[in-house]
Image (cartoon, rainbow, N blue to C red; front, side):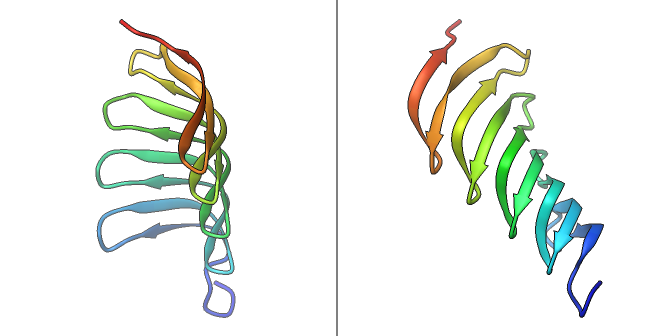
Length: 108
């Protein structure tokens, strides 16, 4: 800790059960880190000023995942959703969390 702020690399356990393991700067998640949700989901990727920012992978409890770019805590830029079996389900571009360009969707 630096002047009462989390700084460097460490683990934080939240009262609601979530956990963050990764880098901190001035008490904010910053750099690379993994956020574990009590739901069983987790996010592994880049953080900036406490928000997901840069490349990251969001793993869902059911085994599916989203891998792509984030900006200000939202999907933003190219990304791919994979089914639990690893096959591509949806590939496209996002803008502030909304899919704006569909490149590929796989149907069973």
